[in-house]
Amino acid sequence: MLAVAHQEQRGSFRHMSETISAEQAERQLMGRVVKQLRTRLGLTQEQCGERLGISAQAWQRYEAGGRHFTPSLIGRLGVALGVDPEEFQLERARLLEAPSMSAVSATSRSVSDRGAGGLSIPVWGRVRASDRGHQVYDTGEPEQVIETSSLFGPGAGALRLAGESMIPWAEPGDLVIFDRNRHPRRGHGCVIETLNGEYYVKLYQSNAGGTLMVKEIYPEEKVINFATAEIKGYYAVRLRGD
Image (tube, rainbow, N blue to C red; front, top):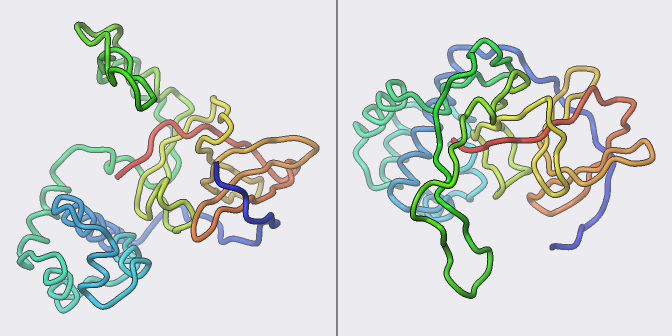
């Protein structure tokens, strides 16, 4: 485990907006388009940034929807990715039509009205978490089936990341699905909700002596302290991705 660089008290952050404008939604959608095209082509953010003459962090802001996607910018991004500008609109149409995690609300919301049904996921045996022996075994038949309703109960909600502090655990633009009824485990993702309506996504460390300790990763690993008197709740992250 990496050593903690230093500790600091949390600063002041802007409250999470409950709604976003149509322009913001379009920027976020185009950011997802850029990320989908890049990952499909097997390119890293660093490689694309070098081709465009910018840093990887600047490229991340494109994928997070932090820029207005003018025709000129789309043309430059197409050159960096090696695709025609028309591919951006085709991918945009695919994302709008395809049912995916990205269809989940960008703000926290209850899913209690979805009922007990849902997708069934087979568990294909066990996997060895070491560099010796067979890596996968007991894979002849599914040993159990998990219903998604057991993963996303009535306390589930979703947030979309806008910052870079959790790279590479999660990137800007990724969705984080959490459960208000589950306590996070040490070293696992958690969502923190403060009494004044702010939300944070970090890695849970501990809660003792009136202090909630969590960790962020980028640009350096460090611990952030929250006074538990200011916290409404902290919840386990169940799923993350784009």
